[in-house]
Amino acid sequence: MHPAKAAAAAVTTLIGIGAAAVAAARYVGDAALKAPPGRPTPSGPRVTVHATEPGQVTLTRGLATLRTGTYGLEGAGPEGAAVHAVVGPVLNAVPHEAHTVVRRLERVTQGSLEPGAKVRLTPQIHTGDPKSALGLDFEDVEVMGELGTLPAWFVPGSRTTWVIAVHGLGTTREHPLNVMGLLHRYRLPVLDLGYRGDPGAPRSPDGLGHLGDSEWRDLDAAIRHAVRQGAERIILYGWSTGAAMAVHAATSSAVRHLVCGLVLDSPVLDWEATVRALAAARRTPAALLPLAVRAAQGSTGPHGDRLREAADPNGLRVPALIFHGPGDTVAPWGPSRALAAARPDLVTLHTVPDASHAAMWNADPAAYEEALRRFLTPLM
Image (cartoon, rainbow, N blue to C red):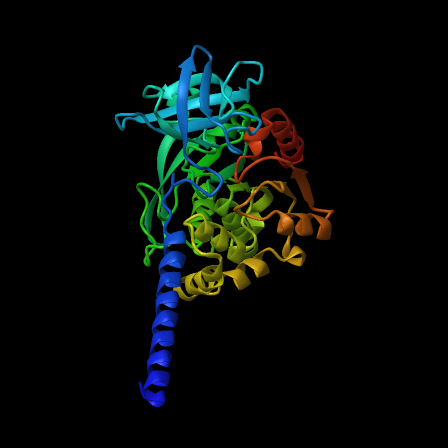
């Protein structure tokens, strides 16, 4: 081939490879932000149920199934029927094969847990609504947001300080049920919000999740709804991207003066790091991860900058309790530590060493609830 033609062919090939890489990165970046509620996060791989006996279940051995604490098991049985159960501690004394682990089986809440079922550990230990799961009276309410009507559960209480609870990645409105009983015992009214992209709620115009950057406006609408219903002060309680929504609302909402406290569980405070984690969970080659992050930013806007501004320690005006730890592979806990170090006058960091994303309560419910009690008491 003539040298000039060979050079042209080489350039064309490189351009084609580059275009393909950009297209792949754009696809992965968008896919990372399209995860619907209930989709497993990187910390929730599927495992196999090997055996069940009264009070115990044998699962494939792995980092997830060896974690301490109490978790939900959800997935599908051998014939595809939905399954949900609750498992407790690892039972090391029970004989088992090297590739398995035995955990205490607390209860089966949906379907039948049979050998061969494919399940994953989830922080959601309840299914259903506050009445069916916890026996709590509640109302189905509608919150009018900028995109349309948002579904929510309202559990009444006698106080005028309300808690607005917001779930995060990989979970649904059922996740806040983990602490709903505790909040009800303190007589705090609780609004458990479904937001854009959730079942029964409008979709985002671009079909993508924004890790709290646009979703926080649905939380703003929920604050306004609570005030119209008699709330005098608001505690925002968020998990994962719900925690990011709470941070945005506490600094950007026109009614932020009504917010008297923040509870942030596994908060997404580093937008780029979480997009990388979600993209990596889709087996994206390491070389494409920076491109995937830039593609996600191009699709949805410069979220990282806005999140950093919202989480600026100098902008914090109310007490905050953060539950986080180094085991979180979706939302790095470095920003949580930095925020607590910068504002020790307002921020309490409750470190949970071995918990996965949004599973800080699951790792040690008693310690979690005691920290929560201490924080909430002066705000009630």
